[in-house]
Amino acid sequence: MRTAVIAIITGTGTKTFIPGGTKFRIGTPYGPSAIITLGRIGNKNVALLPRHGEQHEVPPHKINYRANIWALHTLNVERILATNAVGAINLKYQPSDFIIPIDFIDFTKCRPLTFYDDAPVTHVDVSNLYCPELREYLFKSAKKRINRTWNDAVYLCTEGPRYESPAEIKMYRSFGCDVVGMTGLPEAILAHELNMCYSTLCFVSNMAAGIQERVSTKEVAKEGQMIKNMIKEILVETVTNISRKRNCICSHTLEGARV
Ligand SMILES: [Zn+2]
Image 1: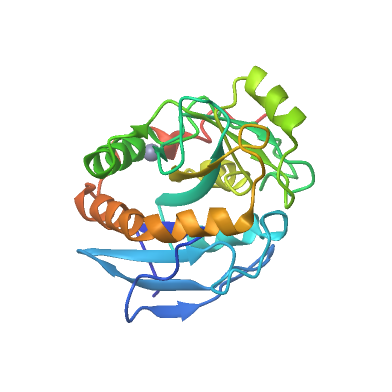
Image 2: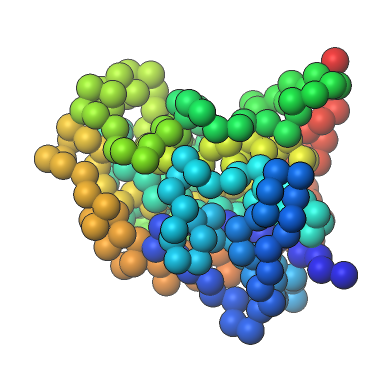
């Protein structure tokens, strides 16, 4: 039987890094998942899922987030480590910084956002969307390598695929958003809805619109390429070091959530 205790969801600039793993898609009630590679890191079974597809062919607003998270759930995954490229809105951050978000603001517009469209009506608490235990592991591992690693940022998710306008960035800053990306949500919320732990390691690829002259995909990809080996090291170290037993309350998310 195919199982994994931890999953890694990668984004821009990071590809499959489990050599010799088994590749497959999983059919779900929401359609087929992205290609998943199942293999070993240290003494743990790990599922690796590049959310844009292995050739980076799926844009952020077309990713089937529900199928991907549901597929990982069927593999018995309890914890998800993700990576996201972000633009910095808060001027204290700069390109090449690592960011482990603590909270989020959702400005996506037309993505299916929940597994709970039917009865029983379910309202999950997202006071701690990002698992505190995973955040701590990621932060320690990233901080060892890049001193400019931050764990206090509010992650803003926009619909994309276009970048934001300077006026939008100005507004988002006044709302308390620190970094912006297009793929962090609803992925994190969907994982939370299935009692899974979720945390993400973001790297700043550029300053947001209006702070630097223009934002280009080439620049984002280049920054991702430079930093991808370090991201891989951090993820492998986190998977290897983390205890098998969860010491957080993420597995109780659905308690008291149903009407
Ligand atoms: Zn947790």
